[in-house]
Length: 102
Image 1 (tube, one colour):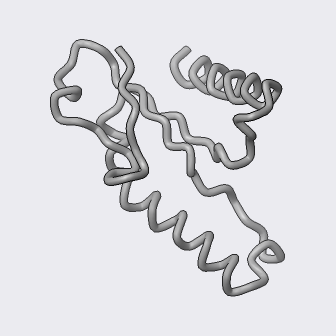
Image 2 (image 1 turned 135 degrees about the horizontal axis):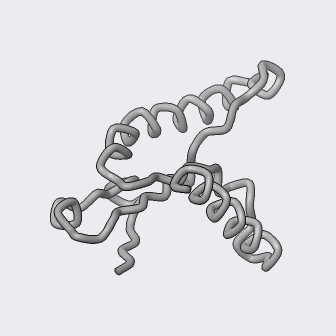
């Protein structure tokens, strides 16, 4: 079973009926903020953009505990229009799951 939603009303929706499902819930949080060096935060707009990502994460992160596993990586570093990039996303997620879940 696959359910996909997010970004419109709830950035990381964990629907109550799914919490009691026999199937594991695997979440995907694709706007996870990457670490920044001081020189990457050298303008007010860059600081505000990074701060908004951190605030969004802090408002959603508690829901990660309702999942069997949550995959967190910055999807913006990839392009969905390139088959090489899609393959890289798949490989990144596969490696993450193998490492975390055995």
